[in-house]
Amino acid sequence: MGFRGDNLVTPNPFNEFRIFMIGGSTTECLSLDDSQSINAVLQHYLQEHVNSDISIKVYNAGKSGDASDDHISIVAHRIVHLEPDMIIVFSGINDLTRSIYNYDYLHYVKTSRKQMPIFRFLATEFQIPRRLYYLMNRISPKNLA
Image (tube, rainbow, N blue to C red; front, side):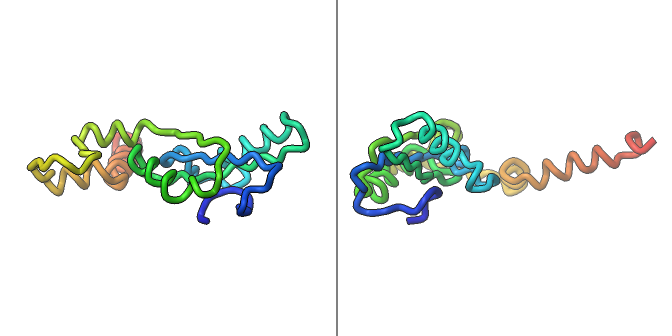
């Protein structure tokens, strides 16, 4: 199914409590191993503190860059038919970023926006200029002395 976590069995077994986590990069935990991701930690913790007759499965449906409209879409199209018992939503920063740029969630209002100059776009949207800046500061003559 493309979710992080244990194998997903359908239909939902009667003794399984199924939790889905949705959100952006904070939920996705791309840089962490599956055993250290937030869904694995939560599943392990809950399984230790719950009746042993219940099998708790936590699935991670996080994807970097997703915001509220993406969360609604994933629930409606990819999760609801899997019979979740609980859905945990981590949202916030991606929505905040979109609101700064006047993102139209309804795709309803036609607005004309000035296009950002390419230099400003490259300097603010990518990590390479920032890393070059810190590298240049690190190897500057005053730091070498």
